[in-house]
Image 1 (cartoon, rainbow, N blue to C red):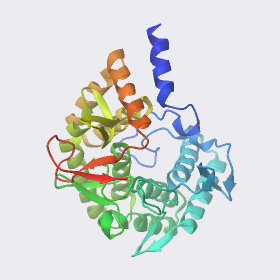
Image 2: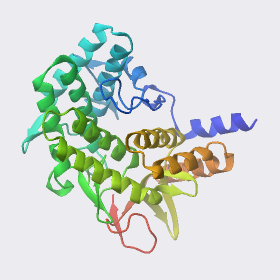
Image 3: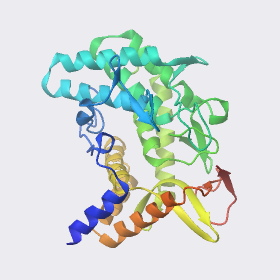
Image 4: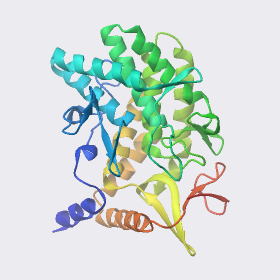
Length: 336
């Protein structure tokens, strides 16, 4: 009975579809060419529409190229190739990488993939997660097939990591510590999963880029230090927060907690980060947040607050000031 109740609660906030398939951590910590950091194999089987080799996403009835979806589709095919040596999967990944480069836009010495859908009142916004995961795909295909074009495009994809959001980049700061924002809209909401995936792109560049390794290593290490120092801001009494945004109704605050799907994703990403860095803080939170899945009341409380947050569709989304990071008593920045 308890398990059925928990499954019901999960389904209340997490659809069962292609975009919400589990992706456990991969254990090839030391070799980026053995696999990707987490399992994307099921993403290689997409039943939707394509534009050439690129899968199309749909938002509010509009088809568009989602660079995260495209990169994960390509990385899933790469994982299948590395599993069994089937060249057709490598051919697909290479075609996806080529078309992804062609679909990008050159800006300020880099290449970007902007989102044409609205987010908190903004359109044509960048994503550190998208830029970083595209770099991961391009670095792997470039290394495996010997494509200088792919490797150069990967470098160009990471150029926005060196510019602030207000200057057309994806970089922000949380209590003075560098942050790479998944939804690069000012003011940032500090999205946890997208930040970590962006760090994985920097790690891949440090390991695979033919030049600039020391720069990418420094950026990865700076971001890792931020993650270590700021994880406490994402802890909601044993459950994780999707980001630091919240909505207010009178004196009541409803935080944007992670759905069970994203809570599990946070656990997998922390396992990956612990494997890459050996940092015990990541293992501590992995274990603490993992226990929440066995404690029905913690999961139920997390789902209830998530449902309340979503239900307040007309309420302002508020995010902490960069010096705050979610602590009480500091000024907020509002975004409609």
